[in-house]
Image (cartoon, rainbow, N blue to C red; front, side, top):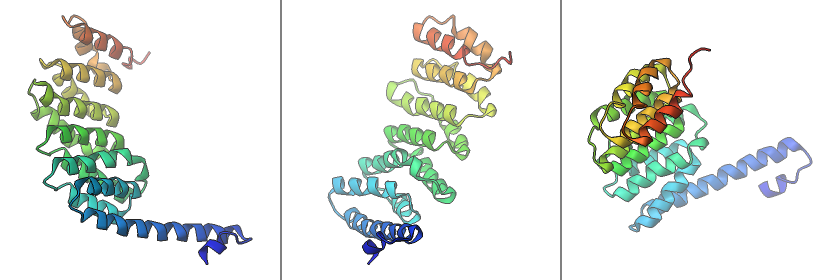
Amino acid sequence: MLEEALKDSDEGVREKAAQSLSRIEAKADFDTYILMLDRDDRATRIQAIYHLAELATEPAVELLRLQIRDPYDDVRAAVIQALGNSSNNYTTREIRQKAVDIALMGLEDVNLSIRASAADTLARFRDPRSTRALLALITTGTKDEADDAQPVVRALLALGEIGGSKLVPDIIEKAKTDSLEIKEAALKVLGMLGDPRAEGCLIDALTSDNARIRMQAAESLGYIDFGF
């Protein structure tokens, strides 16, 4: 009957029929994804996770919250990546906040790649509530090994996307690190923030022995707001 209502002469009837059909289809899909999550096959479960993230509904997000505690790294990674991929679908404030909360859980994961991916996802949501956790990560994650640097690098870039003048002192401090990747990311973020307090740090970086650092410092100086 609803299919017939799509052909109704009244536009309002057609619109309501389309909305009802969409809800019915989403409910059927949701039930299918629940069954997929119960499968032993992780590939099937991961597929369901991506579909649930696309739905961006409260029941779907609650299921994703359960999956972020899964013992398998690839399942937890899928939750974080799926939320990032579908971040634009989360237009309702309450559901968006719940999605961000899941990504914040990923920021504390034992797997460094998942931490880095969580920072990327938080960058897409651009929720200021993420700032404290991201700052904590760049403050405590100070190892210089390449693998350890990635979560810090990605957290720095996420902070650049979120923005805020209060971040500047912490980013300047991070630009003093010995890690090339972290230093370069910090200098990039100072350009993204555009705060004139970063001028001295960026000018100092122009004298670095490393060309990548000098190049990034030169580029970032071009984005500083000097109030001209």
